[in-house]
Length: 96
Image 1 (tube, rainbow, N blue to C red):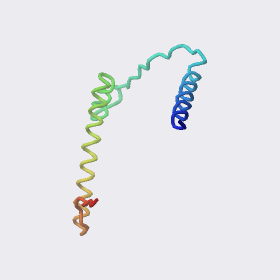
Image 2: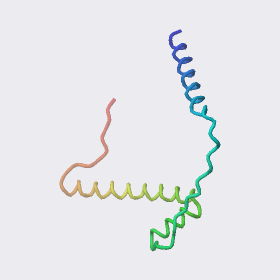
Image 3: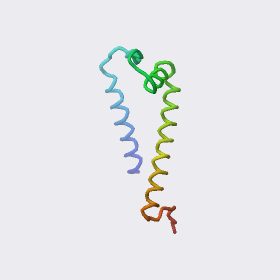
């Protein structure tokens, strides 16, 4: 019974806080139309800024993929360096 009371109380607090957040009656916010000025950019900066301006979804997907590739490269380089200095680098065995 105590668990149900705690659950009901949590839902109550969530409902009250969400209603208080919109209690002021402020007008709906306008969407942001942020663009990057491409006039002074060159090379990779221009490339990524034009992606950002043209298609933000493509920009987000490509930046996420590039971050994953960079993380993989960092991990591989670290693995090679640790092997060169004599540390054992392999998957750990878990015994349960």
